[in-house]
Image (tube, rainbow, N blue to C red; front, side, top):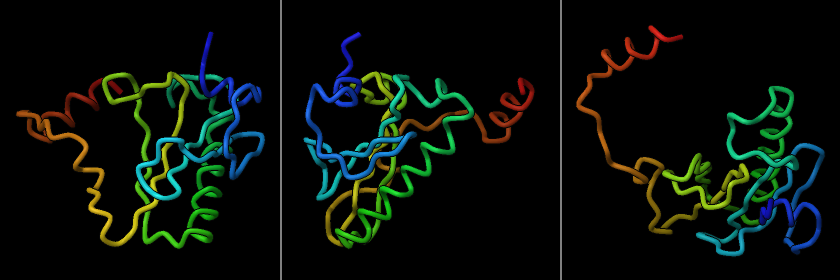
Length: 136
């Protein structure tokens, strides 16, 4: 398997790492959408959140929180957009789970997470709810 992020983990490709622990590695995105745009990956190769072992979830999200703290303190961001492109159709271009932290600044002309897609359903929320809970 030739995975860009696995090659970063192995040290074969350099990265500007700002936080690293046993559960997560955070480095600056080389194609940033904003000052301080950072990517956080788990050290084990997996494609999506659904591939995470339960034992990996807490440590990974603690790494995300730690990275947010670092960026907030050193870049004085006014806010953050945090997201995961989960699967190819959502824009996931590297098949290794990664979370983007995009620092936001007053007047940056960016949108909210709600601006990512506009494909509303004709199904009512109540019908959708019933369809979901009948299979849980």
